[in-house]
Amino acid sequence: MTSPVSLEIAEIDLDAIAGFEGRVVLICEPDGKLSQPARRVNRLTKGALERFLGSERFSNMKEGDVIDIAYPTGMAALSLQVIKLSRRAPKSVARKAGGTIGKWKYNKDLLVIAGALKEVEDLLLGLVLRVYAFTAHLTAEEKTEGAVTAMVSKPDDVSPDAILALAEGVFFTRDLVNEPSNILTTTEFANRLQGLSDLGVEVEVLEEADLEKLGMRTLLAVGQGSASPSKVVVMQWKGGGKEAPFALVGKGVVFDTGGISLKPAAGMEDMTMDMGGAGTVSGVMKTLALRKAKANVVGLVGLVENMPDGKAQRPGDVVKSMKGDTVEVINTDAEGRLVLCDVLWYAQERFKPVGMINLATLTGAIIIGLGHEMAGVFSNNDELADAFLTAAKTEGEGAWRMPLGEGYDKLLKSSVADMKNVGGRPAGSITAAQFLKRFVKDDVPWIHLDIAGVASLKSPTDLAPKGATGWGVLALNRLIVDGYEA
View 1 (cartoon, one colour):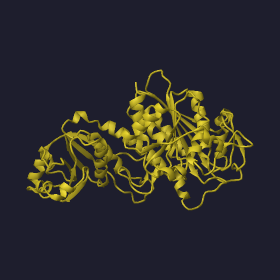
View 2: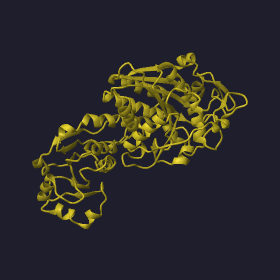
View 3: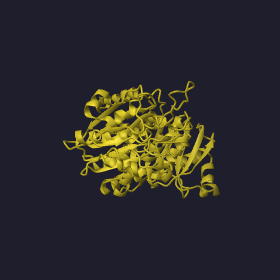
View 4: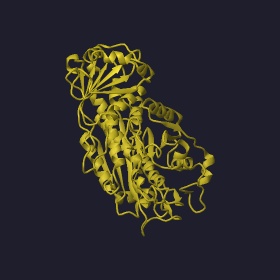
């Protein structure tokens, strides 16, 4: 698995600047005023820094912008990177600036002279997140090693362990989502999650025989055409008291052909990421364990593969859920909701959670509605929805609340079963959420997150290269911190 770069927090050592042989990053105030470290750099560069800070080019830079000066005079560094950033820059700006640093990291040692920057942990988190590279299957491996040292005014106030706990969770999610499906089978996925037991997470794998006894027939129906066995993995982090846990539920379709309702060939290779919801749940559980969260959280993921086969479910089949409701399968490519409905019901029956959030790359319709900037948020509880939206905004992860309503239920009406698994093209993401809502008990605060547009992207972002983003790990961790920690 991909590990974050080495991160060290140190006191400001002016004498160490001249001889540092990697890259030096210097944060400068927008007004161009020289801090003590900046004065040392200016002296080493024979006044070049001060001339730049007084130039029109610097004044035209936006806060968080960067300029790179190769082989600066008077310094051993390969380059000097100057960032325009005020000491009290907002978290989002500091984190984005860190991402810019990380984009230029390559494989060299890095010295970040952050001084008295208030949001230095966000700067460093952005840096660490952007350095990520998925290289597991490259024969000529790209090198991303090279330590990061941050010089700050108050090193005791900065926790590298807290930063790396977040990064480790995000990287775990990204690695899972980026893996090809011939590597990340349902069995391999479960094996990797069992590794979380080394961090104190209680991990339990429910096999097909267990799921059959529980009555999870909608989940099993999705995977019955695959050679890979369907599984449900239960991960419990017990860091709180005797209170009931908060539940996270993830869709883990390791590959989705669409089943008998076969998808078009063009773009089907992207369906390796259809386990993104399960990937995010897994990353959150790792972060909670690494930082020893004082909360009780259970993560449940349904792991299946949706393949066309002589044993695969057909359009027109009727299957019974664990809850007891029957579902007419109109389209076998609407399989994620069939996986989730059983796991949602099981989570409530077994754990009686104080709240529950499910995540899934569920519908293309949410991409039509929100593009790749926002995840869709559907909820039966305003308080929980508001808390999550606040957490997502704090962490800079785009999310937008979408409607639910009884009027959409008529689109799911079936003449041969209690409901259909699709409601047609109109309001596709909403009817999918309405389907899931039928498997949520009235007294359980619940959110459905449709992350189809944000889990994996074709182009880089401020904090990630192209591919898996790890969206949701930071926001869900923040939700637990703010609302459920003892």
